Image (cartoon, rainbow over all chains, first blue to last red; front, top):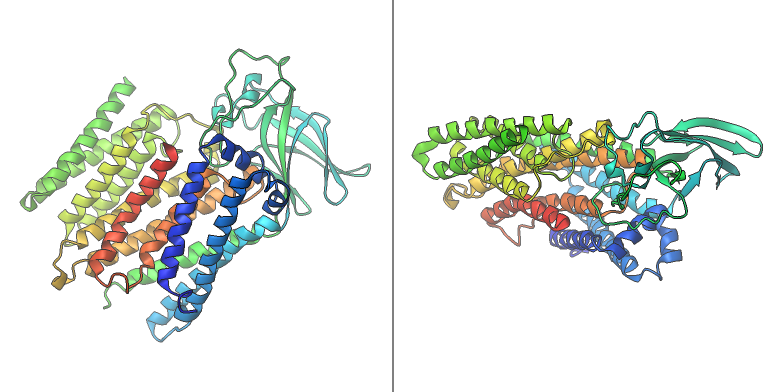
Length: 287
Length: 251
């Protein structure tokens, strides 16, 4: 109990977690590991990925399990340490600062926990769809792609999103019109753009990217550095016309029950940390 | 012409900072230091403006040289603002300059070409994510400058503790706070683009590692190092380690 609640344990487990994350970032530079992250781990719930693909991808799976274990140890330490050291509020101005410090720790604990919960709770699937393509969603819903409107150079469909500059890719003009149906009933018909998802009964549909879904288009996934998509793909070698491509979209279907709560809690966390900092600054004349 | 002008401002501001650092080593030259530092800061602002005009967007997106020049500018401006409010102005100036030099040195490995104006840079979540990130690193280096400046006092006079060490902690915490705001905006960006508030990616691993690194100096156990000087050294090392982590990821 004493060891688990010690700051020494906190520093060791945090350092181990930092090293393990950096190790993951370095491993992420290898094609094998990176492609598993981008094409598998991010496309489904982690629970499902471990159960279905974990044994086939032993190194990423092992890395992830060790990461979860170290993070778990840090959380256990946080609980014991908070219980032992931060619940004694004292009196006077120090009391408020201790309450804020306690709140910061509790909120951080909840945020880390929410990341863990998102591994196992909810729904996530990605689908490549062309015009008139359909996708079955939970709750007997079906999504149909009515129209894909891509007005820019068709060659961009084979390019990485990082090649899509403001002048070359017109965000407002490129969209996909989708319909949500239940049986024969059309429940919703909307335009979907990148960074402007639609939500229906808790399920979010996001347009991840436009791409060329013609059978001949093989993406090799050369390494890159996008925070969101994580990689770059090959740039086209010759001028591509509309006849060479089959415009498609990569849609993401997610239901994240803790999504909104996460942002609220994160907001409170930032606010509480800010208040704690202001209180520390106002106490500069003390001691 | 733009390129030549940019190189002129960039390299001259770097040389100015190096000169300011050398001048700061002689305590009686504190006035000269302030002049050289201010001049370097103006040149730094010039390089920032040229990066901006060449790329067409705020120069702090992604991992280009311009981001480090912006970090240097933020650190320099905050440093200039704080110099007048502390008794250890010259020492603080020296270490803030050292921080700017480190950022510039790292930027030398990056290209000075304008970064592409990607269509999502105009989205508020993306703008805030990058802005708060560079601000966090700039502020964090100022915290490191305070920590290092605190080491100059003899132990009997509170070396490694006292006002500078406390301010170092405050700025490090402010850096952590700005970093949190940046991460929150990143989560919003991710939610909009991918439907999930976070994604597995090497960049995410680096960000998470960076935030955890921030936490270590605040939790350093007394039984390991009762000497406040040692704690100040740990605090000063954090931004350097973070820069090192970013370097590992990018090379």
